[in-house]
Length: 79
Image (cartoon, rainbow, N blue to C red):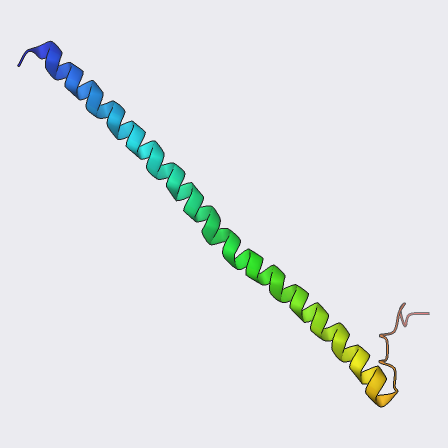
């Protein structure tokens, strides 16, 4: 095989390897983003569920027991 043909094959192999690496890195970035978003979205959903649960329980206590839930004190005790 001539020297020029060997160089041409090496260049073609390098281009294919770079292209494959770029594809793999793009896929990795996509999957890494999905792995990040899954627990974040789950946590957001659970936070909303807790808020709904807390508000519903507070309304049930007021309705069933006829009492109000005490509010925490405001201000400071350094007067």
